[in-house]
Length: 119
Image (cartoon, rainbow, N blue to C red; front, side):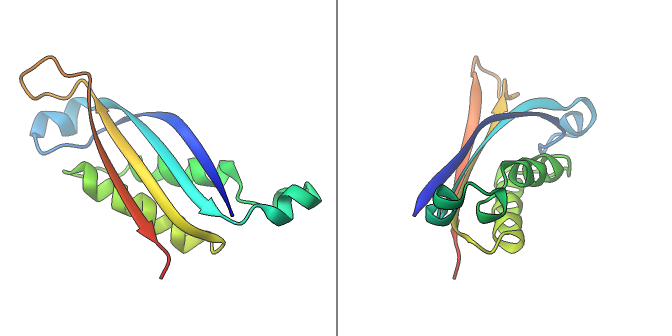
């Protein structure tokens, strides 16, 4: 088994419960960690034998572009889509962080983490 991580994927998205958040948007970062078998690709050195990072990044950026009220909702969509589109992945964990959230305090970011396991 092996782990692939995409760290600090930066997006500008429109998530949030407030009407203003849907209009002005905010900065977000996403981290994605997947568990998959890397033995074959380590031997063959062929992209076809591993999980393509470009595909993972595309899933994240496309899902972040779809407005959600809650970070939990977009995180679940990312995890579900990763498992649906890439059959070799056994487990996926995503962290979605809203930078400078409008919560009335000096807070750098709010982060949620969600994990899904293939059944």
